Length: 295
Ligand SMILES: NC(=O)c1ccc[n+]([C@@H]2O[C@H](COP(=O)([O-])OP(=O)(O)OC[C@H]3O[C@@H](n4cnc5c(N)ncnc54)[C@H](OP(=O)(O)O)[C@@H]3O)[C@@H](O)[C@H]2O)c1
Image 1 (tube, rainbow, N blue to C red):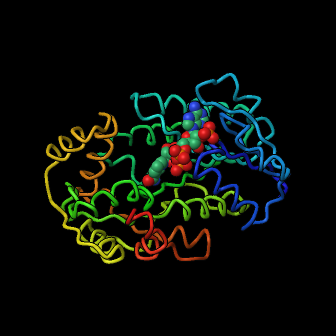
Image 2 (cartoon, protein in one colour; image 1 turned 120 degrees about the vertical axis):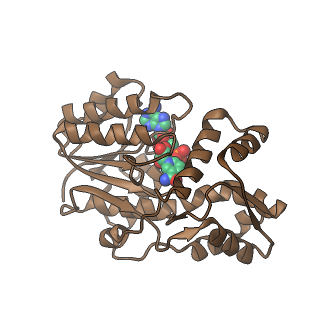
């Protein structure tokens, strides 16, 4: 394609895998890829392979003009600045503004499913960023990534040890996806001159309830796991007493509430359209991560 592709957050877990797939799966020449990160020294290995690395920190808006110069296709990876309300949206708006001013021809962004109809505490960050992108006048493709399967690896080992999964998600369903599949699909979009403009929602292949996810994880781990249905207040109390910070309690409780309300019940074909493959199933993901589940 001969266009310069810039990936922000290039040292993060998703950013690294997007660049991996640009290089290895979609055979984009290293000279056409720019990895932008707060810490370019973390990308020394990629720099040695011929990728341009640059410093880009959304908190330092003045640094972004130089960081984004010459980028034709620019992926803004949403940040993890959730602790302070409004911080992340301000970061993303600075990035969108700088990308437009730098002359980017096509913007890409990692959002979440239906941020305009969501109970999730951080949905306004994504909605506000999507609106800023639309208002920028630049062509765009927004990837609305479903909840990662990988997130479950933080909580499921403990739940499996206890034999209990406390949840307020009721019988709501979601079609989670692996981070790796998100990276593959995003790289496919970045590398394709004909990628769809607008919004793509990246989901896994099945809508599952928490009970169904628990049954699968238990079967693969060879353990018992009972879902204990509680309300949002009880869940918040339990997470807070386990020592989680308030903003993260809000994230987890609001995500369960969003599932219960049916607002995460999306199943799309967008992953397949981008990659020509089926997304990884829950069973396959848990089998591949059996050691982490039982650790
Ligand atoms: N769908 C889901 O279930 C799910 C789960 C977790 C996260 N996410 C979202 O998806 C993003 C990528 O996920 P991940 O798994 O790669 O998370 P991660 O490994 O925690 O990465 C955090 C990302 O935020 C970037 N970042 C933080 N502060 C920044 C700043 N001031 N300026 C520019 N970039 C900044 C980091 O970039 P550098 O370190 O390279 O500067 C890094 O790419 C997350 O940041 C979050 O918004 C989605």
